[in-house]
Structures are given as C-alpha cells and as structure tokens.
Image 1 (tube, rainbow, N blue to C red):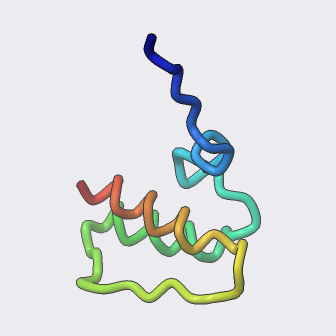
Image 2 (image 1 turned 135 degrees about the vertical axis):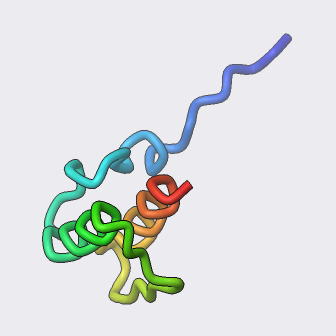
Image 3 (image 1 turned 30 degrees about the vertical axis):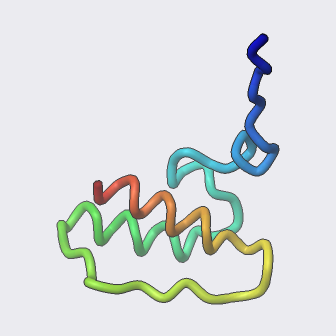
Length: 66
C-alpha cells in the first residue's frame, strides 16, 4: 500500500511568483528589474530576521535564472 505524500504547509503556502510576495516590494522590485535587464549579479546576500522572506526570494530568483 502506498501512502499519499502531502507537502508541508511551508511548501504549499510559499509564493510561486514574485508578484505573490507580500511586504517585500523593495526586494522583489530590485530582483525583477535585474532579471528584465539581464543584469544579474554573481552573488546576492539575503539577510534579516526570521520570517521576512529570505528563502522565498532566493528560491524565486533561482527559479527565474534557471
């Protein structure tokens, strides 16, 4: 018998596009502008306290670049 695998809540609730990110307009605007200009830096440092969207922003950037 195969058990159904349900993704964790952080995987289901995490934004899939930059326009779905809430409260980080200054960050998403910068990243989207860099992607549109095709001027992506070789490194980005995402810092801040827990829960501000560092991992989400990094994952969205990685998906857009790849």
